[in-house]
Image (cartoon, rainbow over all chains, first blue to last red; front, side, top):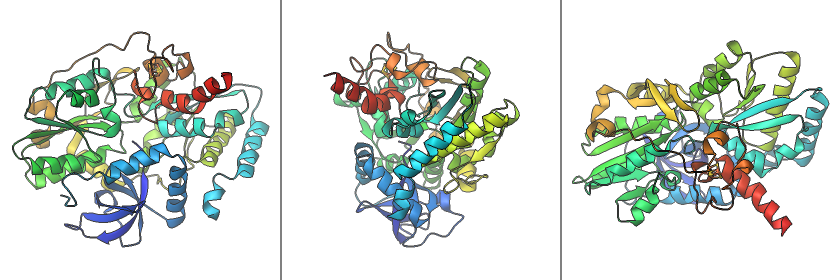
Length: 94
Length: 370
Ligand code: SF4
């Protein structure tokens, strides 16, 4: 569960400025930006996502490398993606 | 994919393992990898095999579900006796056995227990079910604690009355101190955790070098990261040097993540003492919710009582957790305890030493023996 998964920002300011939409392995989900609040987040940026929160900004090389690394671990990455895809209460996030 | 290859390039891996061999002296080296993510990488890539025999890697307590005492699962499950309560937990937590059943089994028996990906999902459930009490069973080190803190701040801001957190967040420094003080393990140095350090930075480890004279290298998770960190440790030990070094500069800054640290201190304060599996009670090693947010504190709201539950018979989870024993020493491994039917938490999460050993070593051994 400590796996941080890289996601690419597809929309900023979802609901309010504290959230952005990111895409991980073709799945989109809203994430909280409270921990990366000191840097600007724009569409196309890579974020390290952990339990629905962006914990760090990543440069593209690091993000691609991490995605590849995790995808090779098979089951664990798939579990994380499945969890990431599980939306409670539909598309609408708080 | 040049960058990808760079960290798993077999030639680079071989060169590093040779550099380590050339560097080691005529002595033993005992290093602990604190984080379960590193344990997982070490088994998955067979890094142990690449190291000279006189380097021993010892698994540490950095797997959040593994350090949770059984009694905490029992405590959380008592909440579900109230039909008005929805208990929410991360996927890994769902499968951790309590003294009788796991949260997943409680769900199968009709209790309202739900798996969530994020504490925000639990908050959303509370908003969608104003007639219910939603409790989030929070666990994790400093990587996860800020997420729970920010969720509580959000709940407070939105005035969500029916949301609470059963807070079991822990901190990584105190168990390292406790392991160093116990002296039994006689460690020469540490591979420091990656993502925890992205939050707290590297200064909280300074005491390892300053007070205990041991080196620590914060490391990334790729094979080359880990081997590089081990090489650095060997060099420092040989020079009699103790320093805190950051190998994982691409994600970790010395000062950590200020916003995350601020969220933690806004919502949480240190508990005087908290029980760890295998390590017993450690002072100032966990967080509880501050009075200002008491409304969101499940322990206060539901008058929860501490339960202390014994370890399952013959299981050696506690000893494995602190590196005193190895997974292969457990009589239950592979027979009674498997990832499908875990008896101990170390078999639940992929970061648990027993699960990593079972998946990458035990199964292969059994297959080759026929
Ligand atoms: S094999 Fe199972 S019971 Fe034995 S130490 Fe590991 S988790 Fe505990």
